[in-house]
Structures are given as structure tokens and as C-alpha cells.
Amino acid sequence: MNPSDAPTDFRCGYIAIVGRPNVGKSTLMNALIGAKVSITSRKAQTTRHRITGIQTRDHAQFVYVDTPGFQTRHSNALNRTLNRTVTTTLTAADVILFVVEAGMFGPADKQVAELLPKGVPCILVINKSDHIKDKAVMMPFAQQVAAAHDFAAVVPVSAKQRFQLDILEGEIAKHLPVGTPMFDQDDITDRSEKFLAAEIVREKVFRYVGDELPYTSTVVIEKFEEEGRLRRVFAAILVERDGHKAMVIGQKGAKLKEISTQSRLDMEKLFGGPVYLEIWVKVKSGWADNEAGLRAYGYE
Image (cartoon, rainbow, N blue to C red; front, side, top):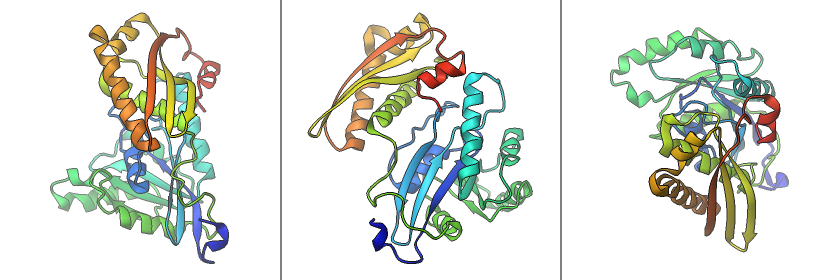
């Protein structure tokens, strides 16, 4: 959207999505913008970066910022880096979505609630509400969580089922500042295709290798080339030791082949054209042991 074409009451702003790991933050953002730009997994710590998703309506532009789940255990270099990402995002947001899982509000959720700034409108989003069969328990649960902060609104949703996302969007719009759009109407993220390619491969690694692989494993795009509609992507999966390398490759290369095939299909869907993909698995011992090493591989 051209800023000059926006109505005078147009609203635009940043919406931070925060919560403990595995409450469905990435799934929620993908559902809100209608495209998969933030990877999802049952494995904690899947989201490592601030991922921006953009949805432009006639009356507002929503700039969602998906954050890593706030880490309350194991104070290592990676977790400190992830937590810094969360707190920095909170201070820059116009609206905050505090996401909890329906029926679950434990110590980790409470620690995140304590980080919520008082001067920023915050909406309590109760995700996975379709999992609660007895709807009579939803109101007491919502009241319990709402006691932790002065929330601007409380909205039960199901990101996977797209339940009440229109209501959530309406509540967000009420609190966005009036202003011109920051991005073009067709933009869905401010991240590069190279970055998105790395995230897609990383998602498949965790999906097909599972909990056996340490969370510090990551993906680097060593070369990304465009020839018309064709993308040529050369990726490296970085692991900490030879045993992890064998896990990713699998028997006779079967696991790596599955990772490559599914990654290529997702890239072709997102980029809207054919993709040639090559993936190697490399051992980079000690790369995740310090914050300098994390920054070298793209962590914020």
C-alpha cells in the first residue's frame, strides 16, 4: 500500500508475540498473516530470532514480531541470547500478545508475565482453547491468568483451527497507533529469502530427527542464487559431533533425503518457483558454547 493512499485514520504498528516455549506463538503468527514465515515444531527453542510477519488490511497494517520462548532454565549462552531478544522486542512494541496455553499457567508463564511492561497495551491470548472440552472451566482459568497483569483484552483462540482470530485482530487494531503503512501491501515479512530458506531446513531437521538432536544444531545457507524464477540453495546443517551428523544423515542417507525433499517443497511453495537444493551436514564443535560463536552464525 502506498502511504499516500492510506486513509487518515489508518493504523500501523508492531505487535510482539511472547510467551513460554511451546504455547503456539509461531503457529499463531503464521495464521494471522496467512503464510508460513515462522517455523513450528514441538521441540522447545525452535524460534531463535525475531521473525516479522506482516498483514495489511484496508484499515490497518499489523507488523507481528514472533519471539523465542522465554527460557527459565539452563542459563547458557544461547538462552541468554534468546531472552535478550524477548526483552528487547517488548520495549519496542506498540501492542503485546501474551500467549498462554488453555488450562496451563505455571511458573514459566508467570515469569514471562512479570516481564510485561505496564505502559504497553497487552492482550491475553489463550491459545489451544479447542483442547478444553468443558467450556465452563475457561472463565475461571481466564480470570486466574488475568490477575497476573492489567490486560487490555482477553481472547481465547485456536491458531490451528483459526478460531476467533478475526476477533483477536479487531482487538489489536483498537490499540495500534494511527500512522502510515511501513511496508508494501504484498509484503508478508521483512526477512530475506535466504534467511527463510535456512529456517525451513532447520524446521525439517527438528521434525524428522526429533528430540535426539541437541537444540543448538542450526543451518547456514552457504550460497543462494536466483536465475529468473529458479532458486539454487546450498545449505549446511551444523551439528556439534559426529554422532549427531549420523542422526541427521540416517541409514543410507534416508533421513537427509527426507529433510531435503520436504525443505525443497516448502521453499517452492513460499517462493513461488522451482528450487534446486543441496544440503550437507557438518560438524562444528564448540560453535554454540559462547555468545560470540552464536553471533557468528546469525543469532541476535
